[in-house]
Amino acid sequence: MNSIDIIGLVKSYPDFTLGPIDLHVPRGAIVGLVGENGAGKSTTIRLILGLLTPDAGQVNVLGEPATPSNSAPRERIGVVFDDISLPSVFTVANAAKFGQRLYRNWDERAFGEYCQRFNLSATKKVSELSRGMRMKLGLAIALSHNAELLIFDEATSGLDPVVRDEVLDIMLEFIQDPTHSILFSGSSQMRVWVGVS
Image (cartoon, rainbow, N blue to C red):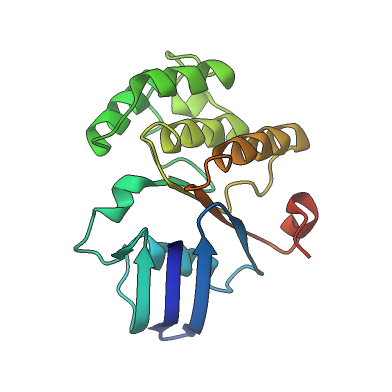
């Protein structure tokens, strides 16, 4: 079974139409969604997450239809956006409580271990974290509820090479489980970093 199956997907806006596109992400694979800004990468990811309804075609994620009314697949997906969507006054400890309410399979121990690995102090506020540290906090949340699919939406753009290497290490560790998959989006500059030709 593929982690993601997209068939004939179309989403139209007044000034932009995405598709039709087909995309398949096999279990155990890392797949890059590479393109220029405005190419529709983030729209595709929102459709995969079931946050938007397609105008045509279908999207299946982890064996289930990705629709706004079906939240089940989202429980099994870890998402890292280009910046964390938490209030600036939240501390890292508050982020853990948020994750616990958001995901039924929240693993407090795993979150603590990732925070230790990333040098994220529980008392630090989101507003006090650098861009790279905010991305690491988002990654810690994404990895702490037993996700089977990780999605990076432009999360690595603009990061320094040291942080990017750390993220790559995490990706390679995650994909050691053959049931796991990763989809990441980025600009054409990302091809060099991930070795996509």
